Amino acid sequence: MLGIGSEIRGDDAAGVLAVNALASLSKKTPLPPSVHLINCGTTPENFSGMLRKIQPDYILMLDAGDFGGEPAEIQLFSRELAVGFGASTHALPLATFADYLVSELNCDCSLLLIQPVCIDLLAPVNEEVESAATQAAEFLFQLLS
Image (tube, rainbow, N blue to C red; front, side):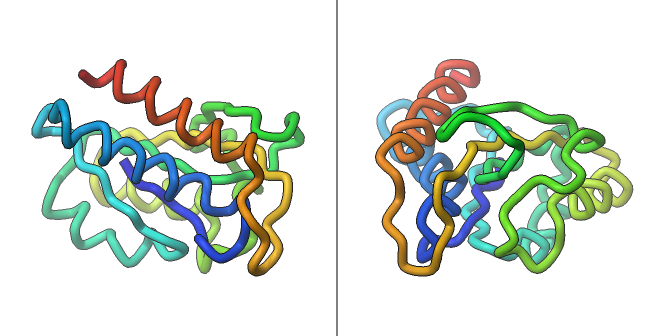
């Protein structure tokens, strides 16, 4: 699971917040050893070597993404439907990176996006978006436990 986003751009931190919340939950009750939690920040492509070593069957990217939803809405997208989504703070579009991972690692890949309110530099994280990131983490933890 890849947590993606910028912690200095308000709601763009949603993916990082979610993966960090999952990591906190897994300290009390460990997730299965096949589940890897990676805080990628704004450059998930820098972790492709690590993913190559792990050889995952499935990768879930957690990020903020403007898909036209309500503030803090959570949606799961296949990589094919994710073209154009994601915050503009990433060096490589997430759909492009997902296509690369599928091609190189022969795995499935999806994106769990949280609709941001504001991704301005040094903006605080919106309370609803922060809550959505926590809810996503709790749901995923229950699903994976």
